[in-house]
Image (tube, rainbow, N blue to C red; front, top):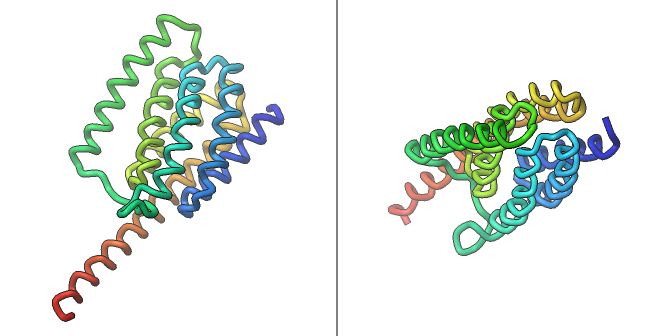
Amino acid sequence: MSLIELFAAICGFICVYLTIKENIWCWPVGLVQVALYIFIFYDAKLYSDVLLHIVYVFMQFYGWYYWLHGGKEQKEAQITELSKSWFAFYIVGSGLAVILLGYGMASATDASFPYADAFTTVFSLSAQWLLSRKKLESWHFWIAVDCVAIFIYFQKSLYSTAILYGLFLGMAIAGLLRWRKTLLESELGDDSQLDLEPAL
């Protein structure tokens, strides 16, 4: 365990905590985390994760902007849900991408755990995109990613990262519950407002 890995893990923990709280500072803290993990995963020969974290750098900036200006009238974005058809599309599309990326990594590189690594890469991209759009379902994808990632990182002796992802798993479950509660409260508030409108 290196000091860089430990610092990146701490940044990751803080980032997820702030994300659960819908705090905009999750994005700059997350930017530091993903930049550090580019070097960590390259050293561990987890090349899919290297590519993932390079993309993450750009997605951090996008999420930062969208959370501030992606809502109605370019105001702060609110938590929303995917339709069932779109949710199924993300799952099936991500699954097919895992097969293609895993095959490519297994055939062309010396990558460790090519298919498992491809799974965490593809599903993390889907999760991060949905998170940047403030979709509730992003937490379902993060939960799946965390379960697979814990196995990979323990096998690669990235123990602080494996422990971090164990914490991420618990936090993803907490995030799902908190965001679902916030969404329900928002919907109830909207319904109450609509009920009052005829009386005004």
